Length: 250
Image 1 (cartoon, helix red, strand yellow):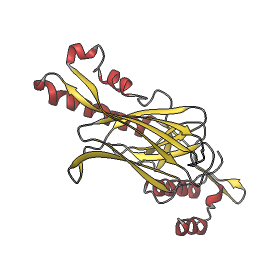
Image 2: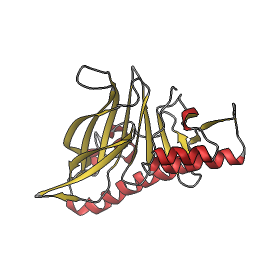
Image 3: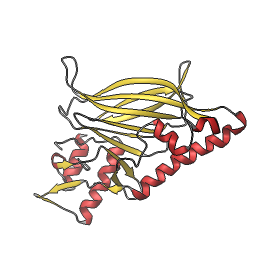
Image 4: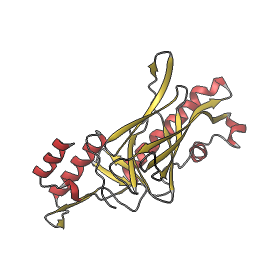
């Protein structure tokens, strides 16, 4: 991190004066085509597994007709504590199973809920198989593990106040789901339907999300020239690589 800070200063960017992304939105995605973070408007991304089911036409009353729904596999609650930043808002970044980079901003009060697909890769540890999801924030990384049969997960992020035994942080409540199909003859058809849905969501974020400005304070002014835009893009790539976590008063 120290070497990176020196690199930023050499480029004319003081990391102490960075205000990363919009402070008004709670969810942003990273667009690799434009090398920029994009604010996600409410309703543009499923805020839970029920919304994802509705969009796909499965679950609920749809289950009677097509015999498909998301079945809960595991439920996990964990905490991501921030040792450097001692007050909200707090932010976490992660990649979903389709390679979409997400950034959630947690405030007090309030919570952010998202549903997304898990990576198809199954990992092994001793005799146990699992899928995992890694969160980055405050210069550290935390991994959550899920049942290997899970294909999607719903996460709820909320602020966890400071206590005697820990610093403030983000509470992560995650429920992993498996696509359950009643008719084995239609299983592959519905798996393909699920795949198209999440890939469509990824494409939607690439084309319709509104850009969230990453304001860089340079020589006492906020610059919008091409040089500043290039630095914003470079900084986004650094964040996604887990090399740097910028935190400052929003």
